[in-house]
Length: 208
Image (cartoon, helix red, strand yellow):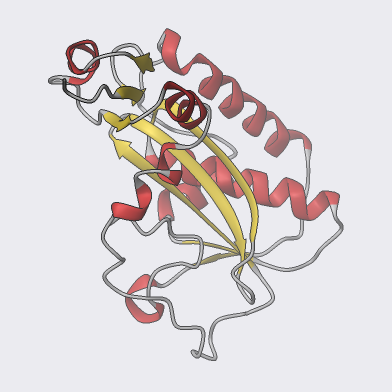
């Protein structure tokens, strides 16, 4: 008798936990950016579904092509770096902030359904700005996204992504971020991370 597996679909037609490959396949077949994985027990599958998929499949990703080197004197070590990752476009998106000097993850949000990398980069920057203002910290923020930096200056997330029932919560976050930018001032310096010269930004998810 073949061993039974349970299947987690994080990104598919209908995300959830499924009892057979046939059920899982129906959710991910021909679905752009589908993210799924099998587990030997229902308990493990249920736990995995309630967590980030990258806790289970991210370790299989290839390392970044150019590792970060903090030896460059141009890099301000006492700083916050932000970045986003998205599986598909649109797809499952998440973002985070990392303290450059130590590599400590300061915040992490997501994954969110039907997002884009640009939206994630924008939200990560606003999250970082709000956090630093709340903590009364004057350190700069690095981002490797020219689009997100411009959107911050314009106080507007100029995404062309279509609003759908699946990403309504994400658009609520965008509206909240734009509102924060309109209603708050900040002195935080936003610096473009020069990937070509410095390697991947410390907040990179390492899935390229």
